[in-house]
Length: 189
Image (cartoon, rainbow, N blue to C red; front, side):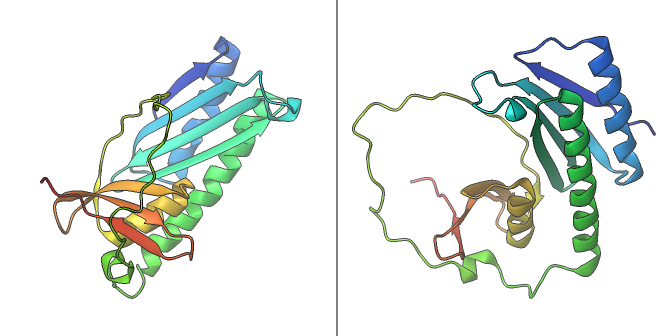
């Protein structure tokens, strides 16, 4: 089975040479993980970066049944950034496959570990907020421990939104300052 690779260029022109190189290299990831549903490669040229070594950005996202793996690398050469992102993705896949076979910890839910948050801790901004970016994504049913794993795999340090398979509701997982996790379980009022 050949992996279908979707390439999205930003602030740059996607030449045939770049498309062929990325497709050829990224398609080889199906050797490591054979249940990939979607493969997305975002290529970006960030002119505003101070260091020329950080201007070419390659981000690879693999989405499959119950997992999302993402890597991002920067370089002064686009091909080097793609190669570095691929190496990082291969290591991430190896870690993911190892975690799946070893098990998922002690079975305690994140809700039991989390310390409740007092209401009214939020601060209001004085200026009107501006939505600079909108993002859509597909929610995959998972439990709290899987959400913690996905959060760390994606490199999200602030929060992770997921569909809780145990409660059939959308939850927000976040990491607290002390390193523990909090779980927000919204209800309609």
